[in-house]
Structures are given as structure tokens and as C-alpha cells.
Length: 527
Image 1 (cartoon, one colour):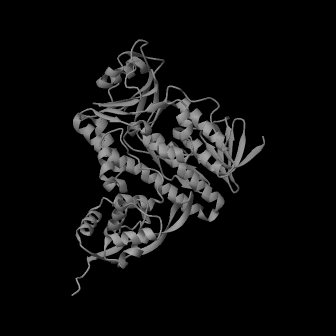
Image 2 (cartoon, one colour):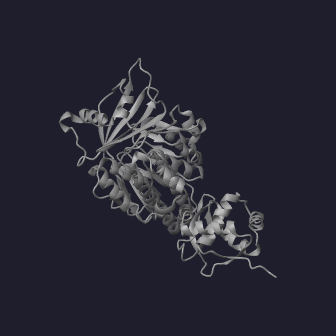
Image 3 (cartoon, helix red, strand yellow):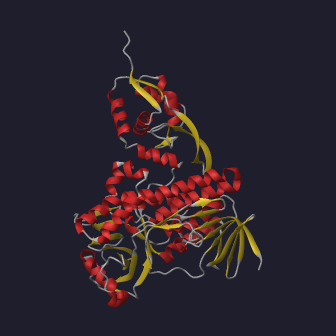
């Protein structure tokens, strides 16, 4: 069997694998995407929020999804714990997408092909091994060699299962999935909207996959949810849906189409997401609860960064270590941040239901998100939104570095808030370079490559930072001591490079003071 050499092999033809393949192929790399010979099941569905449109454009998939005839994601209807019903409606230009997995994957395959990636539909992978000249991967009918392998095989985790995967202890989640069809003479309920409802020992959600069909899923814990096992999967699904009475009421004028399926849906992370020659991408590396509807967006953000890291390593081998460090750190932080931001709505459900189903999930989320920078001060707007399911729980992709992501979180600290109020209250200011300020090089994304970039470091922000809200902190430290008036400092900053909006500049200036990059005192009055 002839071995086919490539620069990169990507295992898995879902959105993450296709996005990474297309991004690398557009930059001239020889990419093979190994996927299954048959399309995935149509009864599985995905929901992509409107906030992912910028990311979809970045990976070259937005036009294809707009043209694919998918159901627009127009918003959410949520019945959570004992809270009033929450309605969230998106404007037309802010809509995302709902789709069955087969339709979504077909659209992404087209994106990868058009970009120049080679699709190999002879999966699954039956053997993979690393050697001195790279990776060798074999399927039932083909053998491949490449310098890098990206595991984008989702929960299957072809390579992720080889000692990388970590499951959260104490919680097991099973998804009972049914395909619902509206009665011929009945209007379709809530077209374009995600429906989410919690109940005493589980929760249910539903997304439309066509004008008259929906994927309806009950999320249960086989050890803690009271399941009607004697009724089989169909009976268990119907019994769980009955517990979600308000969602079930919306689906009264319809029927179950086809058998109910049961799929594992437990959360997991990884000991490492990247090393020389191998990256775990999307759900292969970590899986988040679909409660936020941000799973596909998280996977696409992972693919976007994985392509940058792989391209960097292929074109500058000396940067492989720093690039993998950036990737692994960011993937870990995304997972921890999601878990931390899930705590408020789990607290609501646990308080309303007083059931082990919610209590163990709350304890696990607190433990998993305990060290997350985003847990403390990801911003009041994000933290408040995350208190209800269906809201953003994953930070926007495109962070220049993990350090800058932590700096964004530091914006909400007491030190920064105090500095901001002080700056606003003073008629004049006197800035000096912080006494303990230092500079270190950290890996960061610069022009679609990973590069070592100088970051400012202090005792209050030991991870350091270079940018916050796209404002250059080094430039602020350079220009601030030269003027006593904020408008003059702002003008000097904008003259030296790309200008910044005034609110973002003021936030970055306050962070520089709060972090100890700058010392601030009132300008002395001269007699």
C-alpha cells in the first residue's frame, strides 16, 4: 500500500476539522482530511449562535453556510429553574444557524474542498504512530504520512483517548435524542428558536432542523435521573419530555419521527491539547455542555487557532514550542472559563430543585472552573448573561495571547475600578513607570502567526499583558508620563500608531495603573 505524504493530516470531517483544513490549505500547505465514507446521522442537530458569524467569516465558512439553506438561529426561549420565561430574539443580521449534522458537515466539506484540502473518505483511522519523520496514519484502505496530525474526531478522540482525556468525576450525562415532526395541518412552533427547559432531575432542549422538524433532546444522568427504563428509549424520552411541560406544550401538535437514540454527553477536558506534531482540536480535546449552544463556536475557535499554530510550526520550527504552549494554555482556559460561567445557572437550578442531579453538577463546575481568570471578572455583562442558559459562556476567539485574555479578565478587578475612578476625578495626573514593572516575551498571535512578543509584567499581573481591548499597553506606558492631561495622553497615543476608541483607551489606562505598570499621583500644584 503506497504511503501518501502530506504536510498535515486532519482526522475528522466535522466543522472543526474542515475549518482547520481550509485555513491551512489557503496558506499553501498540503492538507489531507480523513473523514467517514458515509454522512453523519440527520437526527443529530447543531446550533450555532449569531455571535459566531465573525469567526465563520474568519475561517472562510460564512458564505457557504449562508448559501446552504440552513434554518436561521433567531433566538432562544428559556424556562430555567423558578425564573420567569426569558426570550432572546436576534436581528436578521445577527442570526446564526440550526442544522442537522449531515447538512452542516456537507457545507463544511465544500469549504475545505474549495480551499484546496484533499478529502479522504476512507475513515475511520485504524492505526496512528509518531516517528522521527512525523506521523504515519492508516485507514482500512489507505496509508498516510505527515509532519503534523490534528485530531478533530470529536468525542471519538482517535488520538485524544491515548492518555490525554480527563473526565470530570462524579457526573455522567446521557442525551436521549428524538426527531420531532409537526402535524401536517399544524403551524410549526417557534420556527428558528432554541427551546430550553430545566426540570427536577434533568433538562431538555430543542432546535429546528427544517421548517417542520426539530431535534428534541433530554439530558439525563443515568445514576440520578428517575428514568422509565422499562419503557425503552422511546418511552424514556417521552417521560422526560413530559417533565419539561412547557417545552412539551409547544410540541403537542406533532409526533416522534423514527426511533429515539441515546448518546453519551458527559463533559471532559485533556491533560494536554498540543505538543510537537499533534494538536487536539475542538471536541477531541474538550467537550462542554450544550446548554450554552456554544459548542460549535468553541470548536471553530479551537480550529482557527490550531491552524495558526500548525502553520507557524511548519514554517518556523523554532517556534513550535511557544506555539504549542499558547494553544494548550488557551484551550485549557476556554474550558475552565466555560465551567466557571456555568456556575450561576447551576446554582439557580440546584436551589429551585434541591436534587442530586443539579447538586453534583454545581459542585463539579465550581471545582473545574476554580482557577479560571474568567471566573472572577470576565466582565459584568458576560457574567450576568451566563446566569441564564443559552447565553454566551465562551469568550470571543481571536485573543492575541493567553496573557491578554487574562488581562481582559483583570479589567473587572477592584484595583482597575479604583484606578478608573481616580483618573476620572483628578484635574491633572502624573504618571510614572511602575517601580516593579518588567518585560518578558510571551507567545502571541501576530498576523496569523505565533510570535514571541514583549509583554508587561508586574506583581499584580504576573502573567503579563501586551494588549487589552486591542489597546497597546506598552505604548500607553511610553506616552503617559509625558503629559498631565488625559486628552493630551490620548492624542499622543493615537499619533504613535493605530488609534483606539476613547472608552477602550481609558479602560487600558486604568488597567495599566491597577496592574502596577504605571504609578499614578496627582500632579503637584506649582506656586
